[in-house]
Amino acid sequence: MNERDDFSLDSTDGIEPARKPRAPSANRRAKAKAALTRQRIRAAAGLVQALGKVKAAGGKVKAVRGKVKAASKSKCPECGRRLANSAKFCVVCGADVSAPAPVKPRTEAAVKKPMLWQRVAAQLIDRLLPLPFLVLVYPEWVWVVGAFHLICEIGAGRSPGKMICRMRVVDARSLKACGPARGVIRRIGGALGQVAYCRWEWVPLAVAYDLISFLFVWRDRDGRRIEDKLFGVRVIGEGRYRKVKRECVECGATVAARSRFCPHCGKRPG
Image (tube, rainbow, N blue to C red):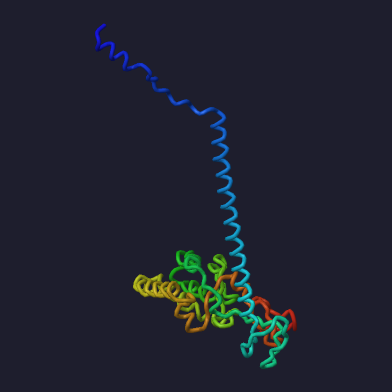
């Protein structure tokens, strides 16, 4: 062996080979996992505490709003002066504030109009019912078709189509039954339109009348046609009609619109 080989051998003396990193023991892994779990628990507890504070703040805001609303309601109905919580009379005008405010009867602005599909379906049903008369007895007995449309709402303001679709014709102001006279007059246009469909030369007029009526029902705020505006009537849902309240003329009590007699005085509400 030469000198160069001796030098290379001597140069490696005293140098230890690199050691591989030892894997963490099971004890260390368990400690790290426990520390991570404690951190997550503390974070969750902090989040719950923050949510509790937000909820408490929301409750305080709601309580303040309730107090403000109650304070705004406790005013004299005559002069508008704020009242104390236990006050029975106004200290400014002397009005009695202990009695409850009278219930105002519902007006036409408080009752919504029926859905458009209800009006269209009721009209189609009323138009299709007299068709057997058109087919069998036309043209000598065509007046039967017109008579059907005139008298179909003479009773309670409900034609067969309106009964099926749960609607009713009432007075536009009092929301009471419109009566036989206006029930007949209101149907004149529909009766003439139905008769017009029996002759080809009158069909364009009947179609034009139906289109105009449809536009009024669709675009008008109360769903009233031209004849409804002329005679002061409107169409409302049966459910709305049963909930409508009106004032008795004799005793001033509030009774249901469908009631024939007042439950307090026993007389007709008027």
